[in-house]
Length: 412
Ligand SMILES: NC(=O)C1=CN([C@@H]2O[C@H](COP(=O)(O)OP(=O)(O)OC[C@H]3O[C@@H](n4cnc5c(N)ncnc54)[C@H](O)[C@@H]3O)[C@@H](O)[C@H]2O)C=CC1
Ligand SMILES: O=P(O)(O)OC[C@H]1O[C@](O)(CO)[C@@H](O)[C@@H]1O
Image 1 (cartoon, rainbow, N blue to C red):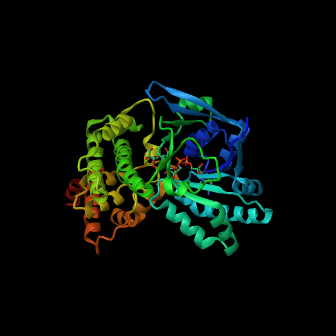
Image 2: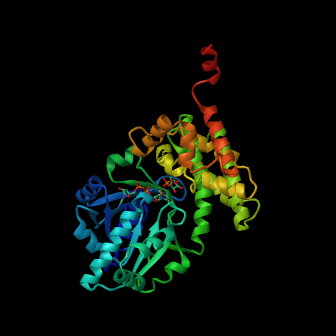
Image 3: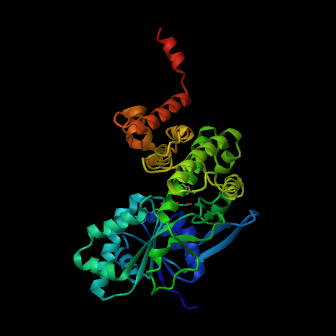
């Protein structure tokens, strides 16, 4: 079969394999994965294929796709081969967290230098994806800053930078799926990638994937996703873990937890509605769809995955504080958003360095300074920051396992 073109997927994790990998494979592209995790790259190469499980639209089980015919490179160990693949790519996708952005910019820079050296001049679409507000601007500014004049000329002439929204959920495989394949990934039924319309239309010399859906305002979409959907999703994860659940769907079916997540989403939506002139009452179908998806027990997405990396998720621009600040901006009191954020300071995932770091901070700085540092709040100089800080701290105290009254009495 004639292949459509060369694709490099930077980040061979859950989305890289479950969204970009599966969809590009089905579309007939030649796939190269690039990742910093040597164990994962070696396993993908040993297996030569992996299973991508996607939930059926009717929720009755999973469809299976065997993704094969790819190559997988470690971004440092296999650098010459990796850079060659990047230099020859028609399409490059990113599917990493933001701690990889700097390294991605360096890799693209090195690939551009190689293209100049080897006289490879063709259009390449760089479709960036991450739960990150300001994704396009980040990469656009980084290339502006880090490319040499010659590299910048090549970049401006041949590269098309486009922001995408990763909406499909790609999670850890269930234990049964993992037994069949260590590299398998479990996905929901969402089957497209939203890409910024004006940006991607510049890629007029490339065969674009069939799974692209144009989205006119990706920044607005990102705000509405991260400051509303992710707010309630992550609330389910933080409250879910605190009250003893392993899976998000079980937390979403709990009466008390679902209310708290629901009210947080309502506060978040009211802020967004005012910011963007959306209807005062959120569309019923959208809300019902989201909650049906949260409560559906087919896909077992864990509270650990959805809540992991609490320092990132509790930062100023992200799903709790970003949503709370936006709500306050428009006169909405974000009580539930802040209360749910407080549960995040109890989130644990022992052995995961990013989560352990949060608890180390609480141990060394105390909860008060940790909230300020992690959430980027300045309660002493800003009234909105103070309100958010007070709400989080008060709820954190409420949730503590020790009773201050007992301690007070014991002190005599
Ligand atoms: N998995 C999901 O359901 C969704 C994920 N997202 C976003 O997609 C992005 C990726 O998420 P996941 O796939 O879930 O994470 P993941 O942790 O499964 O995959 C990320 C991969 O990037 C690799 N990586 C780290 N540094 C790298 C570097 N410098 N160069 C190349 N690879 C590097 C990691 O080794 C890992 O394999 C994140 O920004 C996430 O917020 C957004 C919506 C849904
Ligand atoms: O990928 P993050 O930012 O860690 O967030 C956890 C999850 O919540 C989602 O919104 C839906 O699962 C995804 O964006 C993400 O996988």
